[in-house]
Length: 463
Ligand code: NAD
Image (cartoon, rainbow, N blue to C red; front, side, top):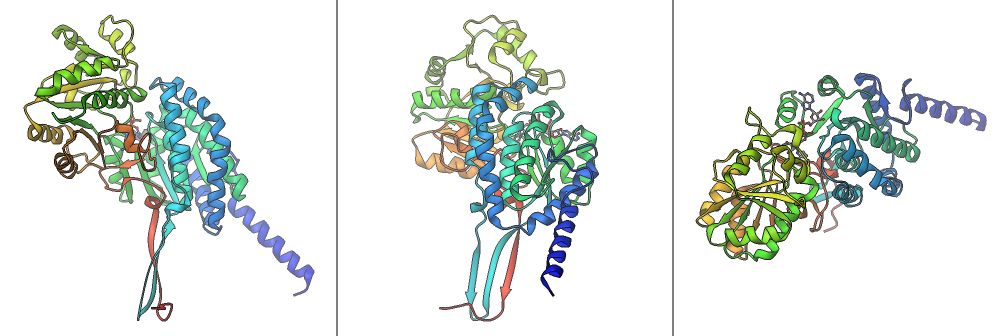
């Protein structure tokens, strides 16, 4: 082959590659009008991405961190304004953790076995196109976290954001897609549709080119995904209890609980949803929580007013108050309190709906129990076998270990605020997709891979 033939061949390969990776509708925004077009384009992108070196994946993540960091405040403001949930300051912390504390390619560890029969490599390979369904409560945090994990794992992503967080989600998805395209030269690694309706999400779940569903949301959508017959990483609801026994260091426990339960107005699925305190210290704990900025409901009529606005007639959380500030919730209940507290606390019986319903509001019921054994029993009931999150404050190591083992939750935080379990003010990486019913727990890049085995039948053992 002479040099001009070689040049022509390279040109033809490059031309073919560019048509493979760019659909007719492709733009660098990744936002399509139709679900199937978006998925087909992402499928082509995933094939091209699989051929690229790991360095491209790392470079995409590095550029995301560099270019999205200056936008974190804007991201938090857009998200709070559009969803009407949470507060900007805490959203900044959540997005910061998501962008910088979600592991990248380094999470994809290789293991090897060698022996007389040769060598086996166990490696983590991409799935193809992942259908990622994201919630209204942590819209940008989940998109950042899922994008880093799934792109690090070598996949393309079709995002189904919550319609209530459409604008901020599409804005962020377009930015990530554009960054991924600039680094890799591949269009449509991160796609979505302009109208992410429930019907669009259902069409995505049924599409044959979606290799894996990663669902972060409430029970209905996780259940629906699990009926598709596809592999599902299901990150469902929780109702995290926090146990406080008589050995706990109460000032710290009170601070941690108020910090955790008020963080982003309690929209996090991992946030403290119910305190179960041993009787002998419960009153002191509540007094210390008041010192940390909580307001305690003491009148029975106020508690009734609060219950009526927090829980609707169907016995569910009143969606209109999810993620709202204590001031808004108190106003809705017709209770006048100034200055506005960080958190509302109320002593209630164990069977109160405020205890059993996942409210996602800064309203924290407190139940008194006689001892640790009763506390653990009630915590199991409150958590309702969702295997999500639980916390405990105690100085008794045996009890801490017993509770962690018995609760069987994906996250168990000892002597800290709930968000320590997300790597915010605690050790460990950050995730906003905690796979509870399907058991993967705190997800990271390796969760979104196929575990593959490659065998060399002779040699490569030097023992
Ligand atoms: P949601 O269930 O209302 O929505 C989640 C996603 O599912 C959204 O994208 C939504 O559009 C989609 N969806 C919901 N119903 C659908 C339907 N019938 N058809 C098609 N799509 C549908 O949840 P939310 O209010 O956005 O988020 C809060 C819930 O998510 C809470 O229950 C919380 O505990 C849970 N959550 C879990 C985790 C976790 O990691 N385990 C993280 C965040 C939130």
